[in-house]
Length: 101
Image (cartoon, rainbow, N blue to C red; front, side, top):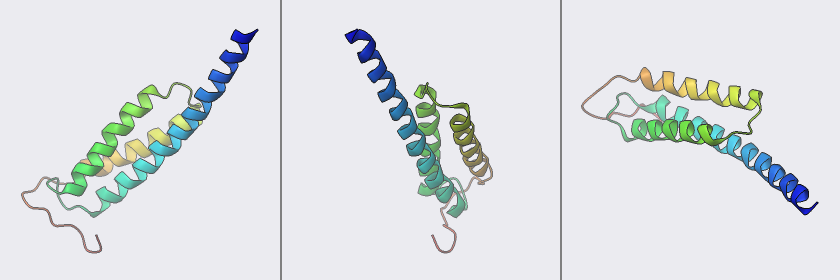
């Protein structure tokens, strides 16, 4: 009986952890999109930060086994958006951040 109770508690904890992880990934991707929106080329530190956020999101998403399909789709959409934004940043030799950055 104790084993069943422990398993239930572990499953509940895992579900909560996955929900928290979704929020962490989503907020990180929003930060990454903000970084991507202010750079003019790939030599900017903001570009590097956005790319690091993208890579970390991919890694975290790969270990979030208990996500609902809706949560996974929402995070994947933001991840795709960040990837597209980074793909559109041209290479360059000097970093000039956009006005207001």
